[in-house]
Length: 462
Image 1 (tube, rainbow, N blue to C red):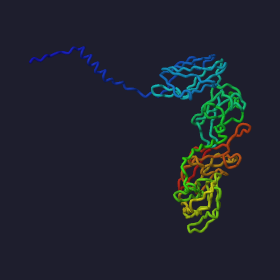
Image 2: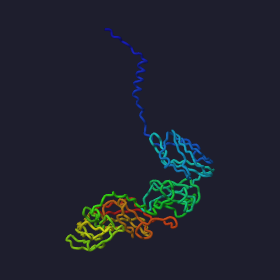
Image 3: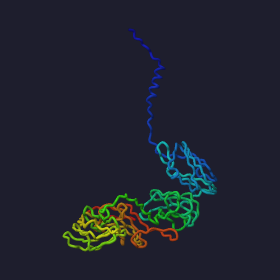
C-alpha cells in the first residue's frame, strides 16, 4: 500500500490558525478600576457666561454619562415656574428651558447627585453650572446649620428657603426665590445670590414648598436677612407647631366575650424584679374612671400592710404608679381586690389578683459622675436620658457636675434642654401673629455607657 505524503499549503495553515484564535478571544487585562467622575469638557454657552439667555444648554463630558433622579436632584436658582427638560445622549447633557429667563439675573443649576458615568457609575457630586442674563455674576453667599429643636439631631431631607418678598404671608402663598438642600451634617449653603433683603425658612422638600400644614417640620428666621458681602451665618431650630396624631387602624370586628370586656393590665416588672429607681407601674387596657385605694393593699413579704409614698394616674389614665423608697433584695406584695378599679365602661378586674415581686440588687446598677464643661447654668439646663428615643429620666442641672450613687446600667443618649420658661418640658415654637422660637435641645454626641457595679466618670464637652 502506497502512503501518499500530501503537503498542506502554507496559506491554509495561516487561515486555520486565524479562525482558531478568533474562537477563543481573550480580552486584554484591564488596569485599575475607573473611580473618577465625569469631567466637563465643553459647554454651550460656556460656564459663567455673561449676557446670555439660552433656551438650550449643551454640556459635553469626557465620557458617556447617564442621569438618575434628575427631577429630585436638580435645583435651578432662582426657581422657575416649570422645571427645564433635561436629557442625555452619549457624552452630552442638554437642558431645555420652558420658562423665559429674567433679565440681569444670575442663574445656577445644581445637579446634586444626578450625573454619573455609564461604565462605573461614578457620581459627579453637586455639579454646578452658572450663567447670567446680565453683565455680572452675583456672588453673594449664605450658609448655616439646621437642627431639630426637640432632639438636637439632623434631618437631611429638609430644605432652606429664601423669599425676596419679606411679608410673612409669602411662606404661605408664594414660590420661593431660592432654596437649597441640607447635607448629612445639617449644613446648608447658598451661592450666587443676588443682594438684598430676604426672609428665611426651613421646610420639608415637598412639591408645594409652602407652610401649608402646621404639623410640618418648620423653622423661621426671626428677622429679615440682608444678603451682602457681610452676610452672617445662621442656625435654624426646626419644630412642629402641632404634632400629627397617629392614625389608628380599626381592630378586627370579632364578638367580644365576657372575659374580653373585663379590665386587664400589665406591669413594668423585669422578670418579677422591681427597679430600685422607678415606681411600680400597672398599665391598663382602658382608661381608669374610679379607684378604691382601700382595696389596693401594698404589703411586705409577710403580708403586713406598708404605706406607699404616693399612688398616681398618668394623664391618659391608663398607667397607675406606686411610688416607694425601694431597698435592695426586698420582697413585696400588691393585692388588688376584684372591685378595686373601674374603667370608663364600668368594667372591673376579672378577679382579685396578687402581684408578688422582689427588688433588684444594688450591684446591678452603676454610679455616675458627669462633669459638664462650658455649661451655661443661666439657661436653665435640664439633662435628659433617652433609650430607643424614649425619655428615661429628666433632671435639672444646678451645677456643672451630676453625681448619682445608683444609675441603671446600659447605653443612654443624652440631651440638654435649655428650659427658657422653667416648666420642666420642651416647648415648641409658633409662627404667624405670635412669633416664638422653640426651646433648644443640645444633643451630646457621645452616648453614656453605664457599667453595672462600676464607678462611671465622664467629662462632657459642650
